[in-house]
Amino acid sequence: MENLVSEIEDEALIMGKASREVSTSQLGELVLEKLYPLDKVAYIRFASVYRHFENLDEFVNEVNKLEEHKLGGNNE
Image (tube, rainbow, N blue to C red; front, side, top):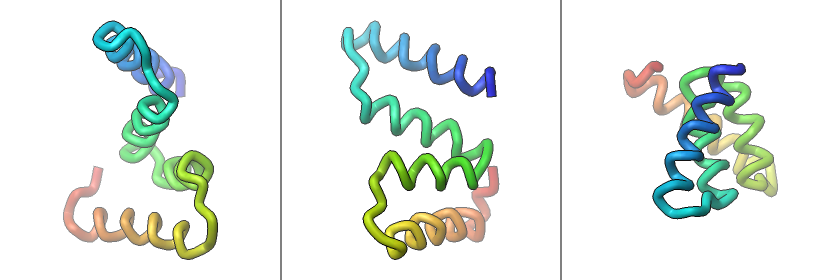
């Protein structure tokens, strides 16, 4: 977990140097990018809050995307 946080901080610093500012949406996407290969459940939990899932269908669609990615041979 500490490594994950360090990676996100490092990348945010790099992004901030380039544009002087890092938006919350950039940080959210960075967290999702880092969580995805590490822990799919944590990814879904964060995505459900970050992307403001309004209903069960949106949640199920995101889970289905994970399954399609897994079945497509892109296991990370």
